[in-house]
Length: 175
Ligand SMILES: [Zn+2]
Image 1 (cartoon, protein in one colour):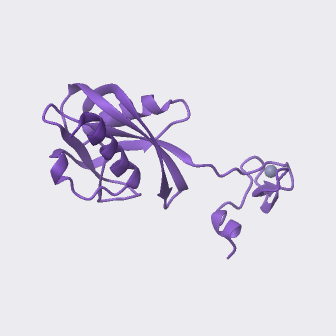
Image 2 (cartoon, rainbow, N blue to C red):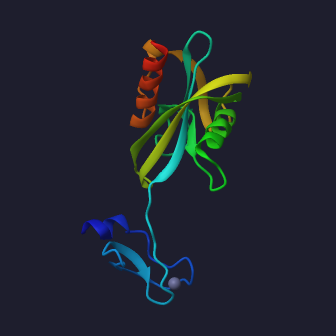
């Protein structure tokens, strides 16, 4: 199967009119699924997500055991996809509370990191160092477990972007 056929394997019908899509060159000579009936073009873009590095006063970091794919059953930072009405910062604050029960605010932006996604092909993660302002640590609806762990006893963290953000915080905090 050629690369574009594989990339667009499950993109078959126009979301505007329901007609069958055909992979052909657009005006930039890039192959994309397009609708012959209404002209709609499907663009596949990286999906933005936010991830939180949350430290307590002992510099232990909050990790969660993932309840959903990707990475189900594996350890990761609290994280989630950015909703259409959110900025990366809003998403980080919301995911922190939803997954860990902790209320927080942004202390520092950690930049971004592109990750492979088995679902979306590519996710771009925005990382934030969070400051805890309230709440108590407990696994929320989106997490199977949530706990503090010291940085030298971290289990395997499933996403490269999350490992990168943890390293950024270690450098920033001299840990
Ligand atoms: Zn159409």
